[in-house]
Amino acid sequence: MHAKVVSFGHYLPPQVERAGVMRTIAEEPVGPSTLAAEATRVACERAGLTASDFDLIVFATTTPDVTFPGSACYLQSHLECGTVPALDIRAQCAGFLFALAVAEKFVRSGQYRCVLVAGGEVFSSGVDYERQPDVARLFGDGAGVAVLGPGAGRERIEAVVTHSDGRRYRDFWCEYPASRQHPVRMTREDFGLGKHLPQIHPVRVAEFGQEHIPRVVREALDRAGRTASEVDCFFISHVLPEVAEDAARALGLRGDVVTIPSARYGHLGAAALPVAVSEALSSGRVGSGATVCLAACGAGAAWGAAVIRL
Image (cartoon, rainbow, N blue to C red; front, side):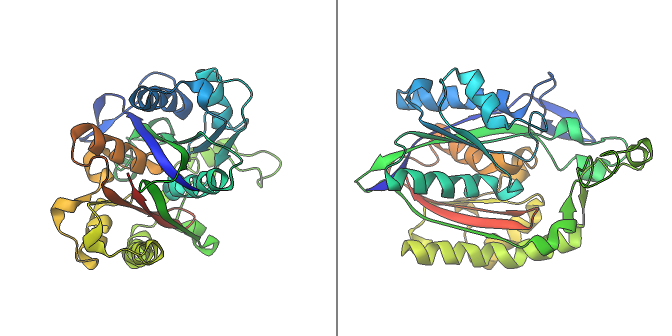
């Protein structure tokens, strides 16, 4: 038995102009779990499922609803699906791939048979469009989900590869509020200095992505026993869209088989890949039987890739 993706779903709030660019912005006071609940309803409708079918929820997010409990618990509450286990994954931009890796193993082991894998972000309430417009304009809000189940046919998750390098955590991070700061997690001085806002070292982040995205895509293809020419569509996520473009060129990919989420609606972090695949399915760009490759690289540093036969 192997694991397959039964359905994708996504939800994007309306586009709003911020810092001179159009971005999907959740203007109501909501967290990522609210957006993920809407995306889940789409996925359920497509697959003929209800929330009562889920026996595990895995939620990837960089921007949780609150410090604790996890956003997966909030999502479980929104969906009213009982007391099924619900856990968060914190792997930032590559979070959906890490969540997919966890869920795939649970399904393949037989412990769970219907797993909701969600990626959701509300970045807009945590950036400053006036003080740091160059950084703030990179981000958007949204959520995407995948429903996993057991399979025995050709549809399957063929490979998932994940990596982390914690030595690079300062290249792309949000330092405050921080439990390691004493006696309080953030002072007024820290707030005034903008230490609660995302900080990115663009050169280091770009160089790392340019090197590691092509490498991890090749690793995933090798593990799946595939060549790039056998993949119908590549979805490459990076906070800097030009880095994803560079990675696609390094892999020798044609532009018509590559989707770069951050170039379309801003960087959606852990939501970027499931949103992009769900949109491609709803538009007919990819369909049943297609083989897709998903790749992401970002804060952590964390990166990964997956090959999926839909």
